[in-house]
Length: 516
Image 1 (cartoon, rainbow, N blue to C red):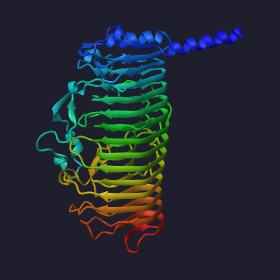
Image 2 (cartoon, one colour):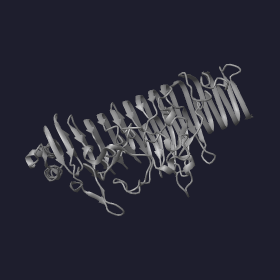
Image 3 (spheres, rainbow, N blue to C red):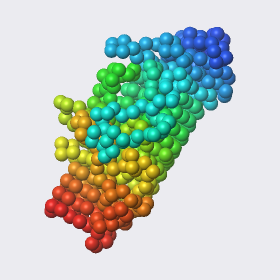
């Protein structure tokens, strides 16, 4: 009995320690928007961690800060009216690296920790105002325009900055990083004005992001929303994400240039659920992959709206990492063309596998399903496989797509954007634009697909559906036509393929060349 009583008291005291609450103002923090509070806030966190953990509370006020490091079993809670605001001075941020250039951490950096919570209802403000030339747009390098339909006039803006992006100065990197952490929760908080990626999880396991309002400037380059890198068991739900760069990026980097948070990670990104979110981006609403050393697999995306974006959903293989086992369902997508140096070309859905790096075995895109999607955009749906990496086993089911005429067609239309491709001629280049274009695909299924068009006038809009270099194609239920600007073309164009299965497709709408 005595032993049980002692155990009860021990557990009670442990619970009291974990529930400890410390206010940063008790350690000298001042919420006047002028005082630099880095040391005071860090002392509060360190004191709480030394006592076993608990809540570190930031009360109402604006607290200027440099880099702060969270620790295990810390709950950093920003009360209503509290703003943790990044300093405008780079010297106030911790230096990450000076190997080639000085690289700075952002506001919060957490590594090798567990049971960490970051919550509101207050806000974290990256103070992007201090780190950009706001009246100057970043332009595409001249060499990158030689294959575009418009050449040097591609995406030209006659006055002002158009859609941006604005020119960066020297700036801190990821505003919030969790590296090699377990059991992390970010909830009920506002994350705003990040000068770089906003919220980054690298090599983490067991992450929940819920009810986050993440608003970065739509003009800021690299201002991603949430980046999940080589991490497992992640849930992102009920978020409103508006960002100049990708809203949600799932990647498999083991390193990425000279950014903080990477330690030569060698495992996949997997078991990721994204649901009930609104996304708006001048790059991709959802981006999966890029120059990835590790693979990405077993992800579900559902109940999403993606609006006013450059790309809706993008899957990109450029390195040895593969993308496989992905489900996308119940999604509304609206995309348009943009001016400026943003990656993307108004595609609601984009899948591409093309070499971005020498001397590696290029990864694959395979086992992908899209269902119950309503989309409208100013460029077509694109599946761009290559001979060395054909796209495998992709299904489109119950898709409604309206292809709109863009006011930017003269300065931007009629191109494909595959950046970052290794060969310059495949980065950004002139191309016809069918409503749906697939090349180098194996086991492609299109079921109940409806395509409509605005009254197009540009001749680069062509077929309704074009599939070339394919093996095993099933089309079951297609309603649509060729572009109104090219009524002489067949609605469906098939070339250089084998094994075609057609059902519920009107007769006389298909043109075939070299199809077995």
